Length: 128
Image (tube, rainbow, N blue to C red):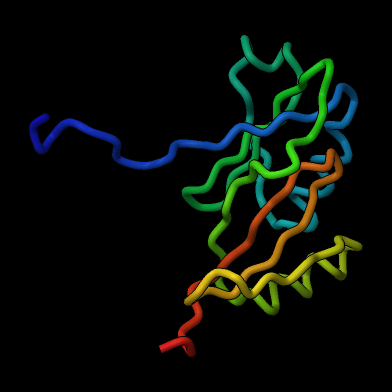
């Protein structure tokens, strides 16, 4: 493989959600997480679901008829100001669970309205 060929970045992460959950997802991802909803291409919009972005991060929520949230799989979302970000989520009624098991990072977990597990982490600059 030459230097110009290979993976460059993660373009987006797709999560599943149950039919009819779009309004709750919009409230969570735009309100609690502070993301912006982005338009789906018209050919994909007919399938339901919704897409969100914050800077280079994109999360696509697709509708799955027989939806069951994954218990272990999740996106890991890098944040800045993790303590303040956790407080923001809690102010929106989101339950968070802190986890100190990743050396060199501060992190917590939360769930979206569909039950998808989300990890939020920030390098711990005090872990030197």
